[in-house]
Length: 124
Image 1 (cartoon, rainbow, N blue to C red):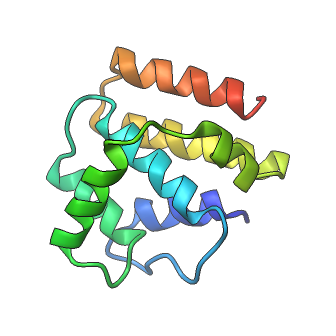
Image 2 (cartoon, helix red, strand yellow):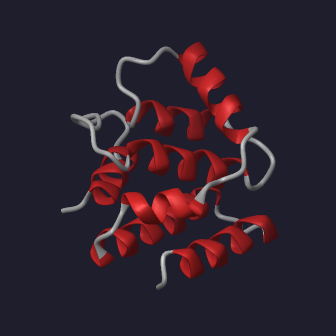
């Protein structure tokens, strides 16, 4: 199981076991999460709770600050691709992003565009 799947498992059950340890792809995966969450223009309480599942030990206020800082920067899909050299991890990252987009039961145009860019950058 790759790190994107570990992220997805923690996100699927935010009251369960939080993400464990660290991985070189963590910053890029969190940035992906932030940009997917903000693609529709806002981060709701449910999305924030999910983000806490992959950020153990970080306070709500600190998370909000981190999210705002990350959202203010452009998503670096090249960094994500570099952090995930394995083809299976890249596929898992796309599945993670797709799952996150589906959490609000609506596909926004910006979310669809982001998924297309992600697919292209990860060479899927």
